[in-house]
Image 1: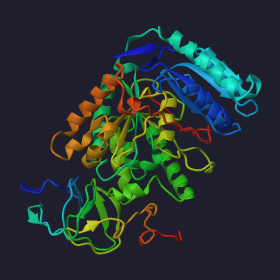
Image 2 (image 1 turned 135 degrees about the vertical axis):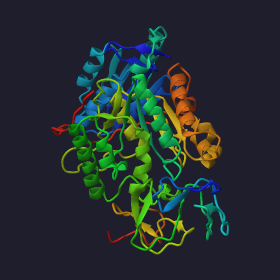
Image 3 (image 1 turned 180 degrees about the horizontal axis):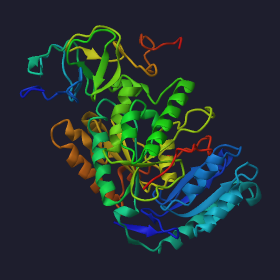
Image 4 (image 1 turned 60 degrees about the vertical axis):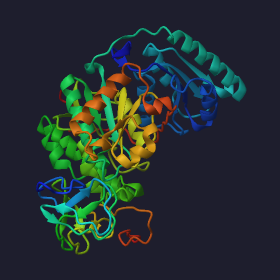
Length: 396
Length: 107
């Protein structure tokens, strides 16, 4: 495996230019700047809201200084509430080339798009000689989510990802999982896997917050497609989702944007503190992927039964398909076929080993299916941030 | 599970009262489960649940060795176990089928 060493000591597995809109009003211009460049090299992220939000700022800072990012162009309308100077300063302090273009000052759409494209072209030219260095498992943070789950997810792809996570933890990598709303019902067992009682308490507290949010919103993490695929209840879906975490001890609970202190298995607590505000904690699968990347994940494992096709900006997504019928229909979108467990052609251990091999290939430069297809989904919404409880902590 | 059981129906834990369909099953099939033939009343899709034994209304549905819901009707061995005869103890299940009796519009 080979990566891109960064000034903060972390290693990237990609070297992308981000074009970042700081309010929806700058989204079209940002997209116009990025269009015409390879989607694998130039990607768009942003925040749509006009009003400031501590969570959104922390997420954007973490993502713009993510190890897979080599240069950042900020596109501002000019009058939005986002702290563009603070973000620009944080990116510059990380040692990355960066520029900020405000559409109102640059002369409008056409002038900003032209200036932006010139800047991106220059950044790509400079990055052609970005230094590279061997990458070890201990340099990696690997995140996982499931999306479009069905009755096969919990018996093929999810436990296979769990086997892979167990191997990666032994290799020294940090493995992170999230989706507290899809772990409701597994509290006691999860807490029993914590490396100490305080972390067990933090796990229980995280899942209790998820239940408060679910009841306030009137929905858990359950979509109609889950039922069509044979899942009947949230607690049934949770049991299957939980299998992604494997059997390793849980070394800590991380807040969004908090990095693992070293190797091991960590839960990312995606449920805000305090009374429910701003709506669902994460509105879709890509919102969860964004949080895992903000915690430092350079590679993402995505388990799907019904057949999600998403990828992500910034980090490559490896899709593990749980359902052999889905795989037959959507093979072009899938990286690993865990449905072979049901057809008797592979064991969970073999699929877990194939996922680990897919990570090694991806971190040696091979494109994942969603990368090859040009996917670069991204979403960031308002969320409450900060004021963490005293029991949320990390031991490693 | 007994040797000779149909591999298309998988009990994830010895205590489970449902099996997961690892392949589609057709109505009228009689796969062997726990050493005894099981009459399949209706077609079962991949990933769906089948009652491993008779389940009384109000009894817990056990999968992965854990309670994942409650039966809302008596279910015969071999019957499809899903939103029409099972509910969550946690939150109502949201489906797009408005006729689904399990969808509680009154909260």
